[in-house]
Amino acid sequence: MPILLLTTIGRKSGKKLTRPVMYIKDGANYVIAASNAGLDRHPAWFLNLRSNPQVTIEVGGMKKTVMAVQASPEERERLWSQWVAKAPFYGDYQKRTTRQIPMVILRPVQARS
Image (cartoon, rainbow, N blue to C red; front, side):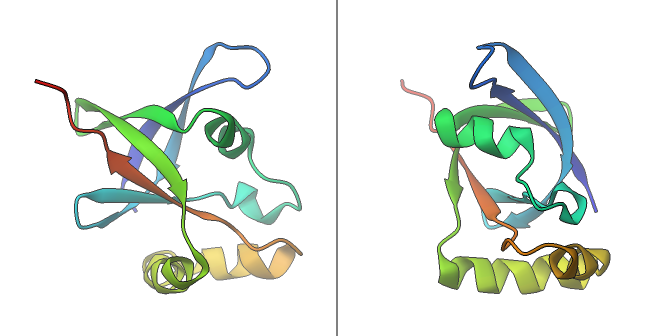
């Protein structure tokens, strides 16, 4: 699975925080999973992007501004099956937790001219 660097703004600290996360592509969008290795709580980065959904990512040496949106139930079903096909151990993560692991779609923000 490829890795991107996700930079969020801490919902409590207000500081920029960068974390490596795995992703898949869905057209022009990047998709990440808030698995937290199957723990029963969301990862901090997920809570941060819910508070401030405009974040930056770095992929292949390029920085991009994106808007983070939690996948709808229908989108999640489609994306989750693609995700688990590429990283089967995520199926085990889902079995470990009582929460449904959120899928987050990162949509590039168009630069204003």
